[in-house]
Image 1 (spheres, rainbow, N blue to C red):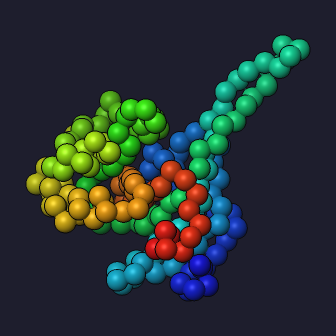
Image 2 (cartoon, rainbow, N blue to C red):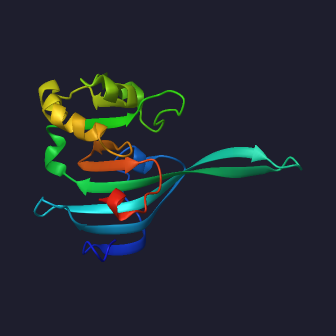
Length: 182
């Protein structure tokens, strides 16, 4: 995929913890990192990767000795630096709606305000959270009906976080097919 799209490839990469997902868990790693030009946007690069954060649970073994057990949480991420949008969008998070499969627990929800999406179909799948100083008019421009239709027509759910000048779009599984990565 990297060769076909003229991307640079690294087996491992360290990412700055600029969004809640990139800082989640007790250990983190970024694998199969590819970086190259974002299609149709001049001068902007995108990084694609398999991202894993691990949460630690302290347990004891059969002899009552303490051991640490790490549970992996695997994602495919796309990372784009967009620092100029920070003034307009101080923090926008489109995450999993709670329910049977849970929600994105790494988000610090007390500091975020929920916003209902116009599409009831999307509102059942997604939870839109923003920082409390978000301009509602600008947010509605971003989540215009055509974008909501685009989100609803994906073969899998795509979530994103925009914080600190970094946009991270993510899928909570390891994607490997080129069409899915596109």
